[in-house]
Length: 384
Image (cartoon, rainbow, N blue to C red):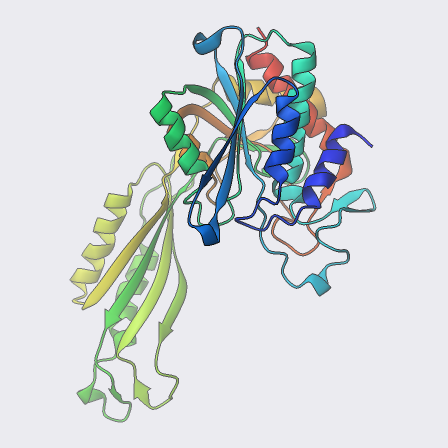
């Protein structure tokens, strides 16, 4: 058993359902201290939702003048779902048919283990490396993400820490390891729309105002709007309704209000302000009485092709003989926080086909190559 696989299994065996870390970061910190890292635990959040964050750094011989490469990830995992539907205990690492099963194997304890072992190997052969290496690990990526990476980034910014490159270990591959890396993500803007009507008996519609009927033309118009046309890196901005609720449960009552939850996944061609303005213009033009509460889940970020993407792509080609595609698809990630203090942020990890699913797993054959890719990226960027 390789050192990487052994560490993956150790991490998966800890039931670190968000926001709990269950000792994963302490285990990582002990290993990093052994190879010269200064490790700091940063806790945040209320007692009932306490988040643990690890900031670990090994300063290179160039000191503050050198470049810093950060590996970022999360030790928290999503809930298992119905345990009885799993073919093996989700927190007992289990091998079947060349795959390692367990919650977090893909998202993202394999990446974290590969990062740690890659760093250990790199330091063993490059003890006098020029640039600095850091790891930023949180237990609040799968949760609200209010006390995790965002808090560490705020603290680093206040200290004047300079980050040059960041590799986030999100599972970005599709069919096989190395076929896709993410060089950006769309932003997320959600709204809860409450359209006001007048409740009444369904047999006397003239005495009521049906908010469903009132809102339907406006919702149809919003669904048909071309918000932007995207660009060379991003698809067009998408507006989607996720939930609609109205009514008292009775079939003979016109409801007094309609509640609509919707979300924008938006690209860099639009801004939260421009999207909000256009939504309000449609609603107002249709003469609706409404309340609308907005939640900004994350800003989009984009890393144009450059040193980091080139180094990572070269490492992938060297290890698995694939030229990765650049993509900005998928949901949000903690890269949106890191991008505010780091100019080059790229996401790369194992295939994502089973993340958050029953019987989540990773191909064992991908684990060592993933570690080697991370190590080769270090060698290309900060060794000399």
